[in-house]
Amino acid sequence: MSDAASSAARDAFAARLEHPAARALIRRHRLRWWEVLPWAAAIVFYLAFPDYLGFGTELLITILFALSLDLALGYAGIVTLGQAAFFGTGAYTVGLLAFHGIWTEPISGLLVAALAAAVVGLLSGLVLLRTSGLTLLMLTICTMALLEQAANMAHDYTGGFDGLPSLPIAPVFRVFEFNPLYPNTQYLYSLGVVLVCFLFLRTLVYSPFGQSLTGIRENLLRMHAVGSPVRRRLVICYTISAAIAGVAGGLWAQTNAYVNLSVLGLDRAATVLIVLILGGYGRLYGAFIGAVVYLALEHFLARIYPTAWQLGLGVFLVLIALFARNGILGLGERLWRGYRARRAKP
Amino acid sequence: MDFAVDLAGIILGGVSAGTVLFIVAVGLSVTMGLMGFVNLAHGAFAMFGGYVIVLAMNRADINFGAALAIGFFATAAVSTVLERVLYRPLYRAGELDQVLMTIGIIFIVIAATTIAIGPGSQTLQLPPALDGQLNLGFVQYRTYSIFLIVVGVLIVLGIWLAFERTRIGAQIRATVDNRRMAESLGINVDRLFTITFAFGSGMAAIGGGLGAEFLGLDPQYSLKYLVYFLIAVSVGGLGSVTGVYCASLLLGLLDFALKLYVPKGGTIFIYALTILLLLWRPQGLFGRRDT
Image (tube, rainbow over all chains, first blue to last red; front, side, top):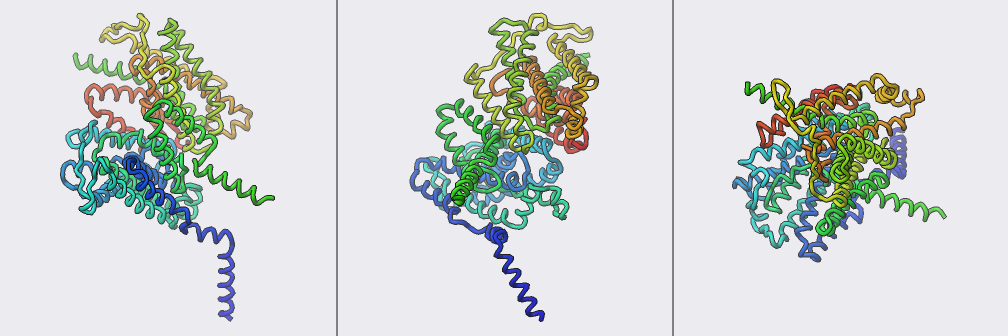
């Protein structure tokens, strides 16, 4: 009867779930053992290199900034060179509020920075995302340049080219003060913020919403055809990405205790793009690898041989674009697959 | 009367600056329109050519005209090699890889120039015939600016004629319109790409040399003016020579006037205008809707 039929259907369904493809899909989002490693490494770094915590803080902020770009570029395929617009918005939000003594509490300050950047992202996304290709690239650059010039012109509030120095930032939880000489608080505070944002992003990209973003990146026409609200999804994604970049910018302003025009420059936007591509985009952990490799090389090479660093970076970028599409993680993945295939063969 | 003189000065200065912008950017527009390649390193060719021209004049005592020719051919030759080796494998790749590689090329060029020539700025000594003032009847202005404007008009006419009246121009237009159809008709698209790329880079070299006098020439050149080249190309419309000419002149005029009247942050208007224009016509002023 219907009982037997439904139990047969249930069995068939269960059997289908046992299919390797179905199992892979179901397990995709589960935590894997190695996902603990970056965070463990961050704690080890804190204990092992107390002299390099300033560097570590910068590293964490770069990771967060690259993660924000990964959402827009890696997952949704929005090719932008203007991500620093949101980083800068976040940084200036925190900077202006603190410098003029309106708001110095750090955690709520980050939320305000995220909100401000999200508003900029939403407004610019609503108009920019109607375009694609070179036009989109140009519009993102122009939006960023517009904000940079605006910050430059509003000299009375933003300090123009010189920026806002020595921002007063209240202690975290009213207890842990930011000390410029011993940036322990800055490091742990940044680590916490990055962890929270990362968990949010990880949940987001494995959600149906994140899946539809990947779909838009891979096949725009088909997503239109299956009735996905492509424009709305892209705008939402761009807004979230902007908010996270805003948090990164706010964090930068708080931990450095100053803001200047460099937060809005093409340099910063290009650097974060390079960091992300270097690590590998569209996989979250690329941001970690890229930031570590880039900043470590920059920290130790650029100070001593700035020209050789630039030359090496250029050669590296050309080689990556030509041979190692999808960065270090993509390369590692390919090598790992080749190794496994060779081992399985004999 | 004073106002008219001021206005004439702004127009002449702006148009001559815009002309240089056009000479550099026209190659970028054609290669982007033809190959769909986002070549951020185009300014590096202008810089390379500019260095060849200036160094040929300063160190080897070659005259201005010959130096321009040397710069054109040297840059065209170098760009042909680069096109074959680096650009070609990425024609079918995404914009992201193209952006990445061309940023890489910019970095390499900046570093190589700093190592080989030095971080300082090069100065161009104009030939005495161009270095004076010219009386136009109603206003007196720099001979060099007027020379640039005339050269620009000649180049626009030349390129326009080459596009409309020559066999290779017809092939380029056919390929921009429909690449597969053009290939089916037996047009050697690969060769066409190489030729246009080399020619565009050569033009950029001439632009770099002609503009060295007031844009300066230092290792950061290609980054410093990158946004201007891109604005000229995207506002003008990809692949449209007249479009890039108009956009360049507009940009030159605006930039010149704003620097004069709003010295601090006046460029904000340029960015705002670009955004509005591109929102109104994403394909640029003279671009076609379907590209």
